[in-house]
Length: 188
Image 1: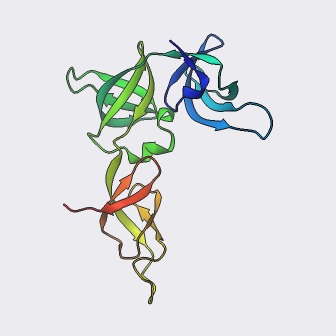
Image 2 (image 1 turned 45 degrees about the vertical axis):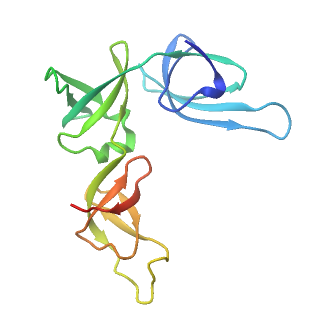
């Protein structure tokens, strides 16, 4: 299906130069002189190679239709992640690079949404929030108020997150998977 280049979004799959590419990032750039253009970072679905392309915003690109299906994360097998279809119990092996750094958020039996173009998996979408335990947090500095800046904390999955000063080691918090940011203290 044809669409204007300025409608390209991360996660879409494009047919470009006879190859399938998944969009990783896009940015519309408006220079001081001349017309606006869109800068797109893409990954080739077959080879895994990345490239950057530029299109004028009025150009058209070929977007491929994707279908979504819910899978449950089972385990990691080398460089592959193993997911199971909860309806048919069929297992599918997907490369861990589809998730990038977000692979650290995977938890046993976590439901994820997998995008397919025909039979090829092109993207894995995690839930927007996960609950993780703080394993290391700096102590509160005397005189620091609740409205002051955040402090660094290490999560159980090894990632670092900035948290409010009242959060201590051992507590569970809700973290946004998209950008590894603190949402709230876990109430459970």
